[in-house]
Image 1 (cartoon, one colour):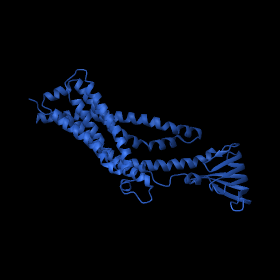
Image 2 (image 1 turned 60 degrees about the vertical axis):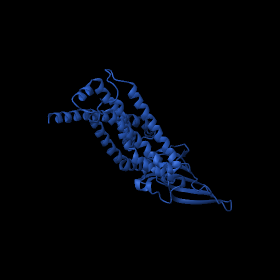
Image 3 (image 1 turned 90 degrees about the vertical axis):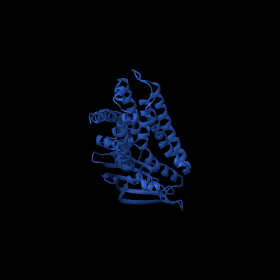
Image 4 (image 1 turned 30 degrees about the horizontal axis):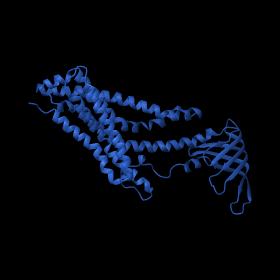
Amino acid sequence: MPRRLNFNRIDRYISFQLVLALLLVTLGFVALIWLTQSLRFIQIIVAHGLSPLVFIRLTSLLVPSFVATILPITCFIVVVFVYGRLNGDRELTIMRGIGLSDFAMARPALSVAAGAVLLGYVLNLGVVPACLGAFRDYQYEIRNQMAAFLLEPGVFTPVTGNITVYVQSRGPDNSLRGILIEDGRDPTAPATILARTGQLLVNPAGPVVELQDGSREQIDPKTGQLDLLGFQRNELSLAQAAKISAPEYIDASEASLGALLHPGPDLRPGDRGKWLVEAHRRLTAPLTALSYTLVGLVAALGGVFRRHGGVLRPAAAVAVVTVLVALGLGVSNLAARDTRLLPLIWAVTLIPGLSAAFLLVRQGAPRA
């Protein structure tokens, strides 16, 4: 009973260090990636006077995808670091002296890796697709709202690729004077709209320009004659063009697992392979946390004791994981072109972990 109690205390001792280090390292990497990715949004937010809450909400929707991507790497880093420190402080030697095998010492790391696998499945199968879908919807909403801020007096403002707006003056109440709009949404019959006055209205669906006392000039494509239509009041939605420019299909990263495994007939032919690869990637990516952890354990628990730690085995483990990450990306690209290679995605994920588990059991076996 006392020995069993000591083993439980050792498990809790190692697990606490692993969990704490995993949280700190993951948060550090997420903060770094978030900072680099958010720089492209800062200029838009500052230039057009949008609220900082818009920036925080927009970038926070990307955080779950960052966590799901780097979690297997951080598991490997933490295992190599924590067990390397334990080995350098001779704590592993003491644990072996009281009867702990390498597999018993690896048990806390495997438990933490199992938790990372479960978290990875929750993120990949539910949280990340939902957040990326919300990110796209919110991004288009911001673009629609930004159209109201883009209109500057005396400047030809391309609201989208199809509509260009010029206003002579703009009042503090969003009243407009001297309005000229080039409407090219219909490429066969572009139109020019003139109005003396107008009002910019910001609605939840997007900004709308209410034109007053104007005319619409358009060349008839059949006769080649100029058609002139006067109006007292007219409305032009600046959000419609932004919605037209939005993709008409759901991206693979936003689709559910069922939709990825069974693509609909309306999917573009070249995207079928990408959707199937994305489905298998979501199913295998969380398992890489366990595989990389096993690789780190083989490097940390193997070899002879060195007071200041060994460099060769951790360096070799880093090289192996780097090759595995690159190999996984390469296999995914090949499988997207030829779906018969989809089993290779599972092979690249499972074989390294199984091989590392075999080496871990073998090197921890009793020696004559």
